[in-house]
Image (cartoon, rainbow, N blue to C red; front, side):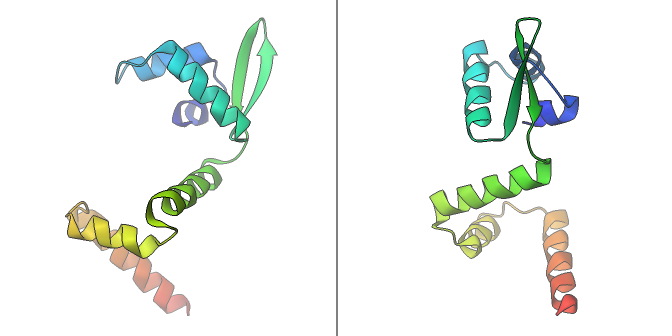
Amino acid sequence: MKVVWRKDEATVRDVYEALQETRPVAYTTVMTMMRILQEKGYLTKATNDRAHVYRPAKPSQQVIGGMVRDFLDRVFDGASDALLVHLARDNKLTAKQRRLVRQLLDEKESDK
């Protein structure tokens, strides 16, 4: 999704080549994932000169929000506090991230 958002539109080959720059991945894996993302409504597909061109179907923040909710439902039974506790206890939050969380919490409190 990040590659398609960055390019605004991309073929499987475009995404495959972009991913190859950071890690090895099979072309068929990219093709399968893009098909799944299309089936889930995250990408749209059009044919252009025999190649399928994919475009984002939704803005990145909307998709990321849905994916996070799905992850929370599947892994933490929908409990966001369990994820936060896990991150805090395993020292997965950097000092900068802890400051950001505190700032967001303070902003939410001042909105009330």
